[in-house]
Length: 254
Image (tube, rainbow, N blue to C red):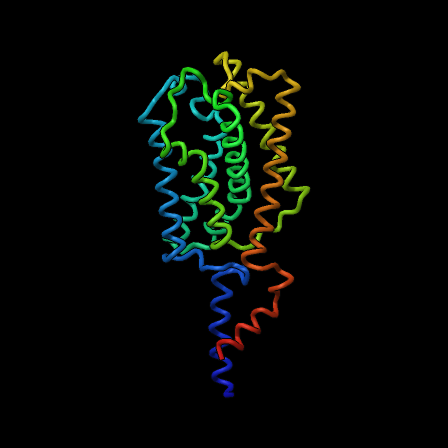
């Protein structure tokens, strides 16, 4: 085996490792599959905002606009994640890619939490979620608000992102901070509008809402840990693919 051949294989492997984490399944940022996913996802998020603006209802005139809904708060963070990801693909920017990964630490588990809560409560009683003055959502916008974001962010994590290093305690801290922040925000909206965005909130007393938000924070924290486990199941773990993985891949190139 010639030294030149070994050197060339090592250079190729070094270029691969420079473009993505050893556990990351597909290249990102890139103008290939990564850009395609992030373009399609960005279109979905843009459609959601288009629907809010061009199919107005009474919430458009309320204090806090549609952002008084947890769904729409999550949608903003999820859209920023995907828009940043698409820009990182088009510009091949490592800095934007790192920013996307930071945003995804919040947006992915938040959207999973929103999807779990929405579809579970809707299956029990849709009236707990929908204000009586609002029209029913058709299937396409319903999916674009309450399912697509979680699926799109999960796909980005599993195939185009490095593994998360967030541990249970910080995950609970992040989700708890979001739950408390949203509770203060929703109460501010109630003080101006005289109604809660979700009828369920109005049916609960303060203690009941505290339990609800604590439960939501727990679901978000658990979603973070489940996403980590699914990532390991799909891509392996650091212990299984540590520094030695690069050596094995060089051997395969030979």
